[in-house]
Length: 340
Ligand SMILES: Cc1cc2nc3c(=O)[nH]c(=O)nc-3n(C[C@H](O)[C@H](O)[C@H](O)COP(=O)(O)OP(=O)(O)OC[C@H]3O[C@@H](n4cnc5c(N)ncnc54)[C@H](O)[C@@H]3O)c2cc1C
Image 1 (cartoon, protein in one colour):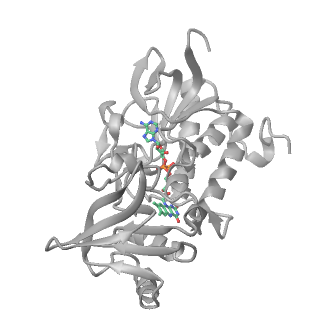
Image 2 (cartoon, helix red, strand yellow):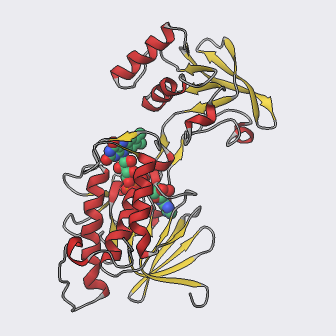
Image 3 (cartoon, helix red, strand yellow):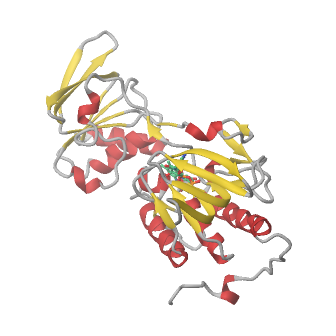
């Protein structure tokens, strides 16, 4: 680092599973990477939304928990010593001579020869319920993601929402919470039919309270510690539910954020790329994973992995113009820097 500017071959925006694998693919071709993520830890949706859920469609792993997949991807990237800039968003991306300059919300400046955008659904955040005084409870007794279900053992948990997350977490937390109540504005849940049936069976068995058709109305407590959640029905009648924790699951707001201002061709909030290279409309800027789109795109982790390999190979002639890339399997060349 000279003059406070970080320099690297490839800047990767987004440290989700696909961004992490892009470090490996770039590393295998000799490129040094720096990564930026607005979340406080790598892993994207896998870490933030479903760390303890098993994934069944990662090749070679009949079943792997999302957090474990992220841990292994970090391990796979580690020999290439990527530099992580976490807890900060890339706000500006500009062309600079033969490369690019990125600026983050924490004032970090990165200059790179190429950029891979692996930003998933963009700078994602939860849809927050419009409740007075909500901010004081966030992170203390109101949580939008469950990263560690054990944290709720013995607690009185109120879940709000009617989709898969609300139903799945209600079923899961009923095993260890002191009480689980689910507030939903309709009697019918929008979750997978077998999950909805299981929820209703647990309610009949008295293990879960269904508060339907009700909506969140107010929070009761002090200094960020909840005492109760107040729900109201459509006629305005209220019900007080004693609670230690509120988990509102109203989906994610998918906000491309600053990415929409970078002059890339967008297609319904996704970056349009050439499927053979994953290059965007701007030469040198690539997009992979959930944020990339092309005809036939499948939003799966495994598609993102393949896209990362395509992008890394397409970057090679930009960094080494006129130099032929001799394709080699990892079995032939091994992993530079890996000890075992
Ligand atoms: C409940 C659930 C279950 C799923 N199950 C499966 C499954 O079984 N199999 C499967 O293949 N897929 C599954 N998926 C989808 C899978 O998680 C996504 O396809 C995958 O996470 C996409 O990876 P990604 O790296 O492209 O993006 P993400 O995981 O979304 O990561 C993108 C990262 O970019 C960061 N970011 C965005 N904008 C910026 C910015 N401007 N500056 C800095 N950082 C930024 C975000 O903070 C985020 O960390 C599931 C998804 C959910 C929600």
